[in-house]
Image (tube, rainbow, N blue to C red):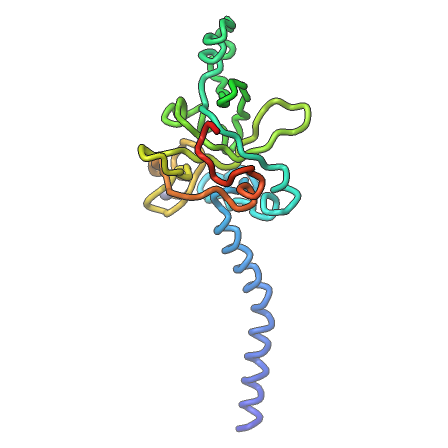
Length: 208
Ligand SMILES: [Zn+2]
């Protein structure tokens, strides 16, 4: 009987041991989900399988130090140029720019996150805060997080969402999981601490 009990104990230990890597993998994947809101998808989404955003890259100290806060309104480039008496033709039709309170125009890259500004006019001509990065010598802004403000001036984190799958997305297209419709979502949220730490005055209102 004792021998049998020992055998069971050994088997249990083996199971636990062999499950350890699996548990670690599960922990890593849940950590990945936590950061889903502000990370870049590791690979282009495949049809029928929800993309798992990559957390490691954007959560490293190095990566975060490259990120900055940009404030202003995203507008169509041609409109912004027309206000400056610059006549540009239709080749610029789709390009959007962040117009800062100082009047600077910063073009936005239509990547996994910035593309929403090209697709969705509800995000344009309104106050936004964008966390993003620019490479040296490149004027284009790579957007990583989008914040807007509600009627009372409360900061809202923006993404798209499938209510059926509880799945966040970052551009307008059918849900990557169920292929159903998604909706524009705003959630009250403060700026990340690592961005606030860089600001002269934490979380100040847009335009200052
Ligand atoms: Zn879905």
